[in-house]
Amino acid sequence: MIAALLFLLACSEPGPLQGPASLGVAVDLGAADAVAAGDLDGDGEDSLVLVQGSIARWDGHEQDLGALAQVVARGDVDADGVEEILLGCGMGRGMPRAAAQVWLIDRDGARSIWERDGERNQITELRVIDSGAYMATFADGKQVEGGWLRAGADGAWTFEPQQLGALATRQLPTAQGVLVGRIYGDEPRSDGDLTLRVGESSTVVPTLRGVRSLLLVDLDDEGGQELLVGDGWHYRYGTEGVARLRLHQGEGWQQARTIASFDGEFTVRQIQAMGSGADAWLLATGSTWAHVLVRDGLGWQDLPVGQIGEAGGAVIATRGGQAGVLISGEPARWFALHR
Image 1: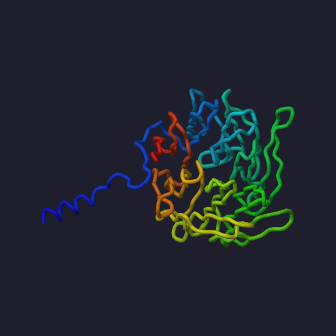
Image 2: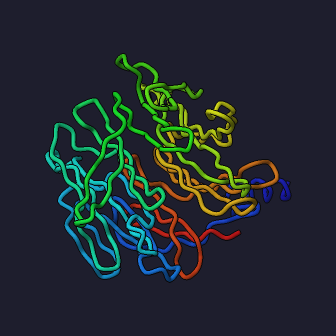
Image 3: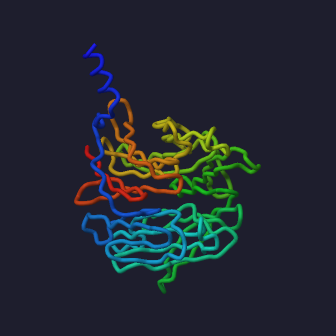
């Protein structure tokens, strides 16, 4: 009887994470609605950006963005040898008329490099690819245009749209063409899709309904790239949405397998990756939680990082030489990933 009682008590209390990886103790950093990170001086240590409302703070700096942070990116966008942080900002709760803007943060501070005030000021995609920035933003109330954001010889940045589609909120240039993911189809409340567009032609890439996130990454360390897709979006997202993460390979990304499905979540809003081969790990931002995925003997181990809410965010960030995850919240927190 006593042995059985002790067994039940042990099972009722959550124990430490088991398996090949675990998350460290949270480091509280102060309140933030959105977060970003990047190595601004090339020393291997990331600067952490905390955005509360329209105010961004990092490394002793403070900047009023004049809008709400919607998407973030990092990379050497100006080919100067060190990373920059990009913040895609726009309208939202409390700031319904804020203009769409892109802010660049580097070691010298922050500056706005692009701005447009239209019918729907929302930036849905921002990526640094080969020393360039690819952006997707609403052209009007429904149509989303995607293209390159580039600096000219005079230092002024211009947006060069190349793709246009109804609710084509996810766009990703690849060597095979531009992948365009939609949350809905042409008809109201119809299923979204994923297509590979090459010139005027397009090929459907198999997905489950709408697509909320895309990422190209070399997971096998073999020189090629795999496509990760967060699909399963449904207009009745609270009851019908599926937070599914798929890995696509092959010509036209037609071969796919599910590597994660997150119970209690209805979408995967963002996917990030670090490392390759056996050391590769992923950060999947769900509808309300951030999840780290690491390889184990059964495939991928899910380490729930923390609850961030439907408007929060999470990014990979390095502190003190240790890779980890920064999540928004009150307070925002950083967790080391121990392998």
